Amino acid sequence: MPTASWYFDFVSPFAYLQLPALRALRERLVIEPVPIVFGAVLARHGQLGPAEIAGKREFTYRFVQWEAGRAGIGLRFPPAHPFNSLAALRLCIAAGGGWDAVTAIFEHLWRDGRSGTSAGELADVAAALGIDDASAAIAADDAKARLRANTDAALAAGVFGVPTLALGGELFWGNDATPMIEAWLADPRLFDGAEYRRIAALPVGVERARAAHAEGAASP
Image 1 (tube, helix red, strand yellow):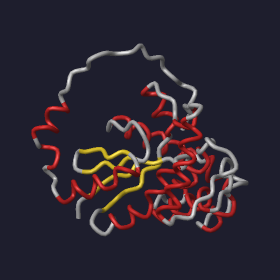
Image 2 (tube, one colour; image 1 turned 120 degrees about the horizontal axis):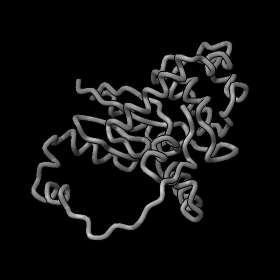
Image 3 (cartoon, helix red, strand yellow; image 1 turned 90 degrees about the vertical axis):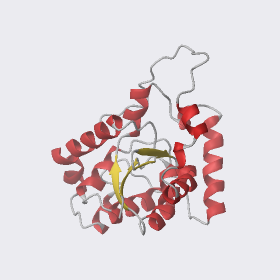
Image 4 (cartoon, helix red, strand yellow; image 1 turned 90 degrees about the horizontal axis):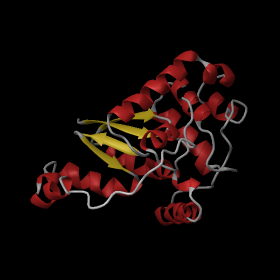
């Protein structure tokens, strides 16, 4: 089967919403989940996250809750958002980084609406994943190094947001890109059409001055 990488951060509700679609896609693809630090991606591109912009934050939360209801996905926001997801990301890596760990941590945070910013807050899900000492697992140098390497690899691949599925040299960003993934799988030459080629080389008409935003960055 074809292989793909799924770049995600537990801070993203859209990554949680995409999990059911990924389960279906995994019948056709070998998908490797790759935890990364979204804040570092935002900092590299000089962007703010949607939850850091007044108005957009409220709309995003409303849309997420609506989308979960429309899709029949149980969702309850954690007590605070955005939150520092480093502990959850490192725990995922310490637990092997497989789909069982990914799903269990997402469900802890987004289905059950629980906090996950420290070893204590993640103790229950850590135990369910076979990790007795969550503090040691999260603080381990190899978990930190792996998360840093994952984030560096995502940036090198051109990732600019989460969730992103990297497949066949293409990047598909966001839960709402799932139908586009399906279309590309049905026709891998989808983007070879004349209009797709034209917009790929479309000139920039005007550029605004942009300031780098490092506020969302967190050290992996």
